[in-house]
Length: 271
Image: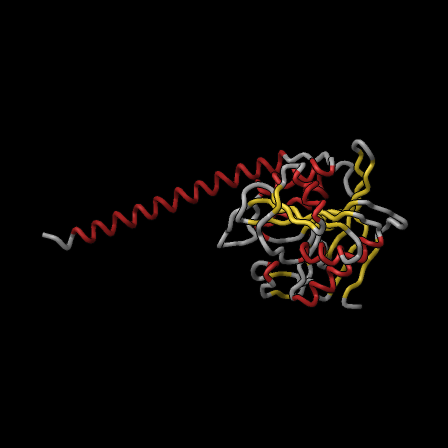
């Protein structure tokens, strides 16, 4: 097997104007949006092809987008079915004011820079072969409020402002999705990077933020005129907020108990 290889499911002769790319990353925001699009976009997107590579590990021991220690292996799918780690391409025919063909790329972080470049370059090549004209690459950031963007061309930034999306001040978009945007631009594909606003989770950098994913999904749907039900994401977001509030309250109680215990210990030292 070559370092990067593909398995075609179908779609010979397909031409798609748009592509949406996302992978595991900060608070899993982009990954959640991609998975929701695959599950809930109507009509449901169809698997088009799979891209395999030596550089796609079975598991990461840390944040995947930071090239954390990893190990080779396979994924365990539904019913215990084994699957190789892969970048998966889906095709969707969207009916709105006009019919649109969209490629959805369920990305995967490679374990080092060399393999990340090899995989991203192959993804860009395949998108070019599918005649994609514009790529929407998804991510998240923790510095600015609301949905933010960067782009490969100034006119795209002006276009995004019409949707209420301001340019981000963040100066890096690391990992698979950012790299695909740059590699695709070398092949003549316009690129818009959309960032949801999330918060850091020190315990688990990829702990899902469904609220941020829902906000990003709504804005992406507005731009591409997609009809996707985000109510499930919004409900999950509300549950997460309640859990976080409970954790904060429990930590406050623990701190209060510790403070009271210290005060009792200190009081014993006085007559």
